[in-house]
Length: 496
Image (cartoon, rainbow, N blue to C red; front, side, top):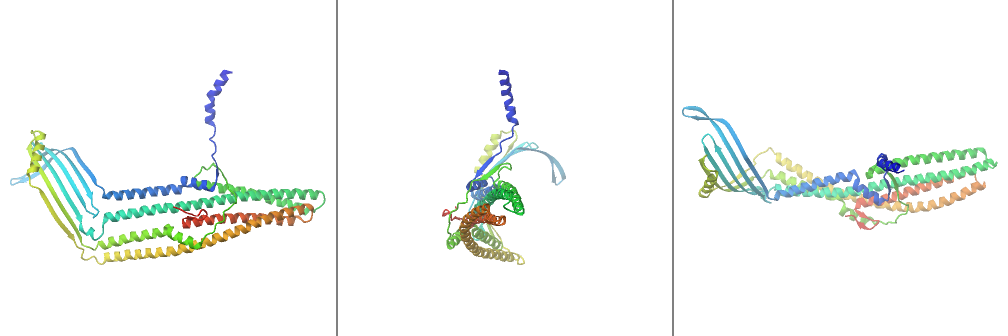
């Protein structure tokens, strides 16, 4: 017995390994579906990468104003070749055998005025094995470089930073807009799937009612109370109800697959919805909705960003016709040493440092001006084109405001109409259910024929489907109004 238990315990992991993984199962509300889509959908993941790009571009642009430090090292470099030299007697060649080592450090501080201040220091040591000499040079320079035209014309650094800030703002607003679009898309898919589920339930209830009616007609035909043609018609109606139910199941499966793909769920996952047809009565003030939309809609700000970017382009184009003036000033100390190669290296460095302190300083200052004279009107044409684009963006912004106002007013009217229709059809379903119950009883009592029952059944099915469609239209109208105004009217709160 113990051996059997040992063998079972040994083979148990292998048996468990061979089992198929459990099928994931989800029972979702609308809010849970939206949360899953925001975390797993391809659209949001792609937009997150766009935001990362914009963040790092902004970081890189702001880095232009930070101090940069760079170093170069040659440790070492040996060269052996021949070099040509010509004197009064003709051309001769001599060998070149050098060992070179160098290091340099440069610290640069960009200025908001588009210029820079830099400090550079370098040491070069060369061993010349042909002349048996060792030379070294120590150099330190402070330099100011300032484009004077950047003070009154186009500043590259400030313009690039502003462009990066605007691009980052546009990316963040695009994510916010796409987030609301995703909410609407998930809501739409959720309610469409709910429609399929409820439609399938309606088809099943219709099949059950038709099956009940068929049993009644079959018993009545057996008792000789109805004609054969009525019994056959009920059988045909039952087959039609069964076919409608089968088609509803097929459509439900397709809607589930589409819903799972939108949410980023596993293709083999089982998904059911936890929802009912209760709704909240929401009254929307059209004027308030329009005012909120104009203050919140991202399309308007995007148009304004385009205007600002185009204004930078205009300034850049105009600056190309301005005189270019650049100031370049430097102050430099240099020390040089040239000793025999047999001398210690520290003596060479000491002599270089002594020479740097003794030698007079080097300095220089210069102003360079470039004045454009004639370009066949090319720059003027570029400026006019840029100004026309800027005016076009301004007109697009104004037109966007009018479009948003019309759109939001239409949505508010549509939401009001959807609410009224839903409330009306809600009463129609109650009346249709009571009417069908009375008609079924009359058919059972023999007061009406099967055609009258079928007519009443179709009326009930149509009332239930119309009510379901009205419910979905009403919920989607609220979701659409929320994404177009950035305001949740159902909960009376702004979307930040």
